[in-house]
Length: 165
Ligand SMILES: [Zn+2]
Ligand SMILES: [Zn+2]
Image 1 (cartoon, protein in one colour):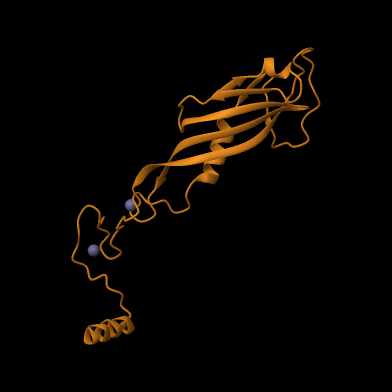
Image 2: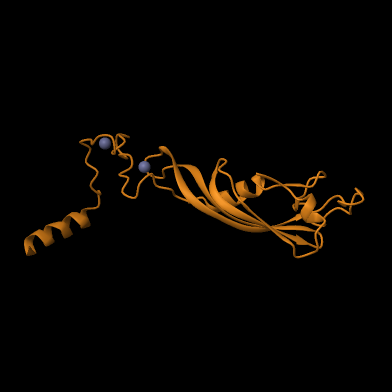
């Protein structure tokens, strides 16, 4: 996901370029706004991504959609007119515009995708998961294990409910 900004870097602060994101894993759509700032380019990105995860219940790998939205300044390292090296960014973690005036948002998209990733993704909302007794994947087949909670207070309550009903 490369954007050449040599033209934008020659434009006055506040100049804007807009692009549509081409599908490229994990992105399957979205758009980017590049805005000239005094020390580089502000990247505003809205992307639909397809993330991969392991189901929290049955542990099967699966893909699921998520939305990534971020604003990051990409710092200019080289003056586009003179080719002279500019003072290094204060922030060592800052995203940089390459010395040939290109912005690569791949790493930023990766980082923000991690943030957007679900903590406990489920392959489907009603995934039955894995039998804790025998390990059978319950979406494939059932098993005959007794998975009722071993707590007798619940059994007593169930009995009461039956008696009342
Ligand atoms: Zn699952
Ligand atoms: Zn079982």
